[in-house]
Image (cartoon, rainbow, N blue to C red; front, side):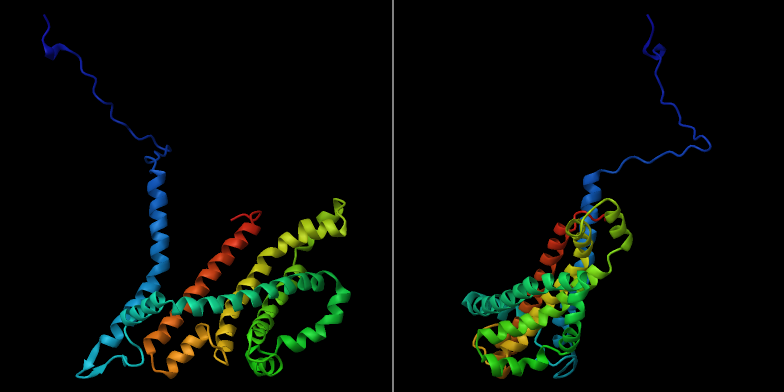
Length: 292
């Protein structure tokens, strides 16, 4: 009878590297790679905002000398106090009332600007006779700032909603219009020649080639107009308004409710960020043909 020591045991072979042959490492779990990329992206995007929030919180509390601070907390309270004031405004419903009023005005003016400026820009960019007719008029108005003629809108249209929506419409029209005209005129001529050589007529050429190629630049103008709509609205609401975030900021300033004033400013910044992200998502939806 053979003992257990007589049983042959298969030993693992030692791998000898061969010259010129690259040994690939073990595959990494795709879920791990996706999660690491996600957390890296999130950290990169919020790092600067977190640093700003930290400075805002500590600067008014940093005592450089007895009774003296790095930043006067009377005029710039700590971020924690501002967030408490923001929460109180939210719970009372006052913040939502002002936000709703501002969003309705901004959306109305911004939507009208898109509906008017995009078709007009496509028309001016595609047809030379229309461009020759309207270019002198456009050059006059494009260099006139919206806030500079705000008193004119108030005098003609009054202090009601019409003047506020109209000034937003005016201010948002020019970024959209000018970017749309530029988008149509800068389409690659080779694309147009190739489409014409395939027998596409003017309508199909515009629909299948010019318009898709112009979408990214058009949305650049729309994003600029989205930011402008909020900025112009805040200035317009500081004149004769009874509700809105601009009114809230102005009213808090006059009554020296500094935390409420900063709460309104934070709300405006958050709305601008959300609107910009929504426009970016919409642009990607209409630009699915593009390669990343």
